[in-house]
Image 1: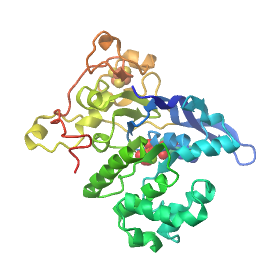
Image 2: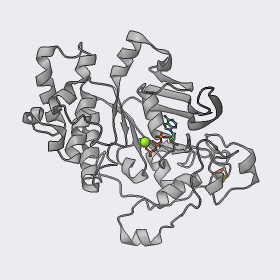
Image 3: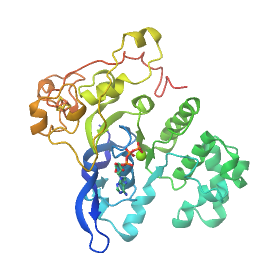
Length: 353
Ligand SMILES: Nc1ncnc2c1ncn2[C@@H]1O[C@H](COP(=O)(O)OP(=O)(O)OP(=O)(O)O)[C@@H](O)[C@H]1O
Ligand code: SF4
Ligand SMILES: [Mg+2]
């Protein structure tokens, strides 16, 4: 396992629900993130996947210090950054940058591309002296596949894919070690998604980056992730290496998500089983007892109401060395191949062109 650059333990974000105007009384909490653990190795990509509202963006915001956790730790090279303030915090923030979901709204329409990409230098002038910034921004435009002469243009003069390239260039400006990409391709056309993912894959090698890559669809993260964490209602319910999750999922929720993934081969598509989940995702202000997935799980039994399943290698797989022996928070974890295994790619990132 590569050296851990980030270690997240017991991460929680609860937003209080209050009643009353003058005398506010807390009547509950929106448990947006409710105990998340993961690690990120240096140079690795961790994909985080889950339906809308499961807490992905809240995790991302805590990683880049846009939100303060209610509880838990985020260790960067072993140091808990949730406790840092002042200069020490600023230095760490420089190394953990975010790329946002919507390239249409995340770029200021009144700023030129040069000012957008170079803005982080205003906060960290030590990275690039004033006289050098224009050249640095032009280099960054070139690195993300845009013409350096576009430096004086405005965001509306670019397509969605090009705008996301601008967002990525801005994320790279301070030469961070970690990029937290919150659904960076979800707002883009399918054909453009692959181009942006390939760009991020290439930049990872060139800039020695570690990625936390968030998506709501398992098929999007497949080609870029080394490991994947599947989130449901504020928690990671299954996590493992890419092949363990895609070819040997053991948690019913992951199996349901995988059954909705597009399969290119028509014959394989005909034979795969679709698992349609019934019922809505419960409110994060009212999380079910025991297993939080039980209200939608076709395998739920009484034990699932009473006991919270822990995220660990299930007992039945503990003695095996096989790919099903990865963490899964289910009392009745069973291996199930939902999508046919893919041909091995020619190289890393192959398959998405
Ligand atoms: N500031 C806030 N105050 C109260 N509740 C919030 C706040 N921010 C987020 N939430 C709630 O927390 C839950 C998780 O939100 P979050 O944005 O992290 O989900 P997400 O997985 O990123 O969803 P999406 O796929 O739609 O982006 C949601 O129910 C959301 O309504
Ligand atoms: S613990 Fe029970 S309810 Fe939860 S996923 Fe497993 S079988 Fe389903
Ligand atoms: Mg989100």
